[in-house]
Length: 178
Image (cartoon, rainbow, N blue to C red; front, side):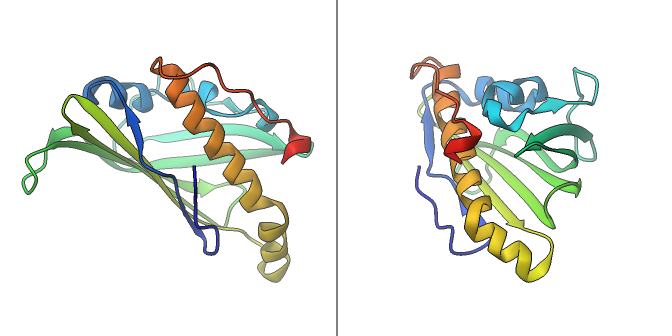
């Protein structure tokens, strides 16, 4: 997974998943699967009762911890576009966006994009984020936030491959590796 961390936008490489779009979208639409896609060092848990109905406007509350600091995180699904044929390309596509309402970032917008090509799904994550606390936050971003995000999305990439039978289970990095 390679990313350009020079700005507050990070984007994962495209990930090809050898499963149909409907199956892949259903997996990522189920908030209960977030636990398997998140490294253990984040001490991540979903506080909103499961199952969560997904639609534009749905809110999801999480708790996580980093370096021993507990944090609450509330996101809203700001766009919800289930699988449908794209009018321009004729391919089946889907997308949803989760945005932070409150939590550890000044800005967090995570776009999940999916496209079906020949019965396989190509997925891409694009995250627009900013850290709080002005210049102090910028130092933190360069010192550990971007490296932590890189590890989180590398884990997510491996966990996704594993979930769809394309790779062994990922090894969760420890907080010391972040």
